[in-house]
Structure formats: structure tokens, C-alpha cells
Length: 466
Image (cartoon, rainbow, N blue to C red):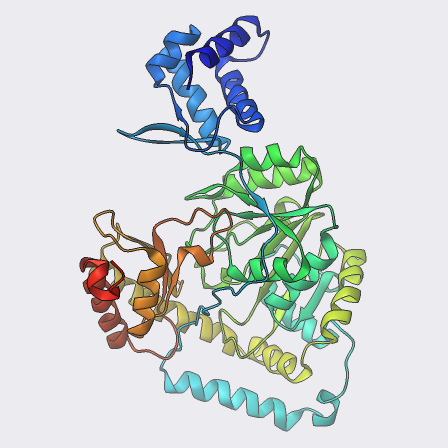
């Protein structure tokens, strides 16, 4: 950064009235990024040089950089300095191929549980009018389906109401319906810098632009989100706040409250994808509680019972909202499967679903402990109940995440590169590993040996690319 630019900052600080110096410096960095005076990866002065050139003290300089970092404008690394991050990209995803390697849930090898599921399913076929389940149905599920779904939702939502609920053929279909309904042509969807790949695929299909929000270990940063909301172009924000895919982060109550506050002040709809919430031991506060008039809450059975059971529960802000999205989803999907809805309702009512979730959680925790022993908890991020983990590739390794994921999949390990989840074209040096599907604990342990051995090898020995 040139001394002339620092002199200009010093003049602005001298002439400012009522604006704290630390905040004004962050504003100046933002202005210079927008104007092009500062480019991505430009080095900023040290804290001491900034303080000397602008006439502020060292503490204020440090606070200014922290404010700019919170806004997503800069980044710093000990020993390397402070650099400009540049503008956050708002992009229209291309219709290219997306990495859609599925996150398969754990399949508990418990004969009594399998028998319980089978007996319950046979009971549905034996006791129901089969022809009635083969006919067309009104979109959104029958009253009986919804009453069963309310029992499920009651574990996570405060006093859910029947008239605000829709039964949908899977979470993915609910997302298609919501994105096509809530987001106007001139608007964008805010997403975290690491997000479920299906969102990128849906956005590409619908021609919706995504605006990437920088995140930390607690979820998306609030200040950059609010700054972008001021521009008036946000159609909705998509969040996966509990056991997030891919990082397994569960957003804290304070972060949820801060994001909800911004959404309430700028009237931003919240798409709350809670695919994994039933696997969490405790029920975190939902956005439905924090911003009920703006929150569209989705959960279902595919990540806590089985992806072959495509059933999701969409809880809307109100009856009018329910009717609006039901009309759109009827055009897109016609209806959910009455047979699937009947099975899911029965499994909820007779306790089979709860038993399945408990068994999945118990087995997932056991496999996570194996991963911690084999890979070390410092290199992985996961959560009890999750059946995937986020593996940070050690700095000492020369592996590229995409190359590593390819090699691991060839060895039978379910690995996906961070690039599949990145929405800001700046993927971290990490991969997602799934430890669900039809594998045993012994097979998972063997997979982890292969992961550890491969990471320790120079990549050129395995890929022949160098």
C-alpha cells in the first residue's frame, strides 16, 4: 500500500466527526476495495506502521483491522502479514457437473431393529386401503400424515400448527420449491462459503445467483451479511445450522440470534435446512422461534432414517405462505408418494423412527471415536451423531484436496473435495469423509488407515502428476 493512500486515510480521520477511528478505517478499506484502489491479496501496513501514519494508537489500529476482518474485507496470518481479501463474489453457478457424492447415513446392523422396521411396513400394507394409496392425492399430505409429522416436529419447534405444514417428497424438492418461489429475478440467495452442493445445482438449474458469505467456526459472519442486505438484492438466506454439511458446525444461539436480527430488520426470508437436526443430542433454538414470520423450516427422514424414504416436512411462516408454496410445488412435483407418507407416519407413531435415530446416533459416535484415534481430533472436525467429518489436510502434506479425494474414492473411501462445497471459489485445504453406508466399524477403521497412509505419502507417488 502506498504512503499517499495512508496520507489520504490520515486526512479522512482528521476530518471525521463522530465516527470511531477503528470503524472509519474499516470503512476506508471497504471503499478502496470497491473503487479498485485495493486489490485482492494486496498487503496492508503493519499495525505499527498504520498507527504511525494515521496518528492513532496501536490498540485502535488492531481494533480497526479486527473490524475489517469481521466484515470479510481482510485476512491476516501470523508471520505473513495482513492482506486484502477483495470483493466477495456474487456468481451465477454454471450448469456444469457438480460433485454429488451422497452423504450416506449409518446403517445399524441390529437384527431386532431391522425386524421392527419390516413388521411396521408390513402392517401398513396389510391394514390400509392399497388402491387409495395408489391414487392421486392433494399436495402436502393428508391430515393423518401431518398429525404424525407434528409429533416429529414437536421435538424441535415450539407448538407447530397443522395449517402451516406441508409433506414434501424429500428435502431437495422442498428447496427447489422454496427457491423458485421466494427469489425474484433481480435477487440473489445468500449462502455460506461452504454449503450443501445441492444448493449450487438447484441455483444453476433455476438461474439464481448465489452470494457467498464468509464463515468462521460458528457459521456465516453477521456483519458482511448485513452490509450486503443494505444493497436490497437479497431474496433469501439459506442456512444449514445444525451439524452442517460439510463442516459439522452447529451454529451457536448467539449467532442465530444475530442473523435473525438482521433478517428481521431487512425482511429477509430464512430457508432453514435442518436435515441433520434429529441426530443432535440437544435441540438448538430454531429460526422459527427467533423469526417466525420469516422462517421456512425443513427437516425430513432421509438423513435420520434412510434416503430411500423421500419424505420431508416443510414448516411455513403461516397458512397463506403454506398455500403459496404448495401451489408452486404442486406444479413442480405433483405430490409426495402416499405409500411413503403412510410408512413414515406409521414409523413415527409406533416409535420405530425414534428407535432408528437412537441407533444411528450411537453407532455414529462409536465410529467418530475410531476416527479421533486414527487421525487425531486436531485434524478433524465432527459432531456426535454426524456420519461425516471434515478432514483438514495437514500443512506438511502436498496433497491437493481434489486429487486426494479422487485417490481415496479409488480405495473405496467416501471422500469429497472441499471444492464441491465452496461457493466463493476459495476452497480450504480439506475433504469431507463419510462413514455411513453399508460398512462395518472394522471396514471404517481400515479406511482410516488408508487415509492416514495416503496423506503421509507425497502426492506424486500416488498420482504420477508431478
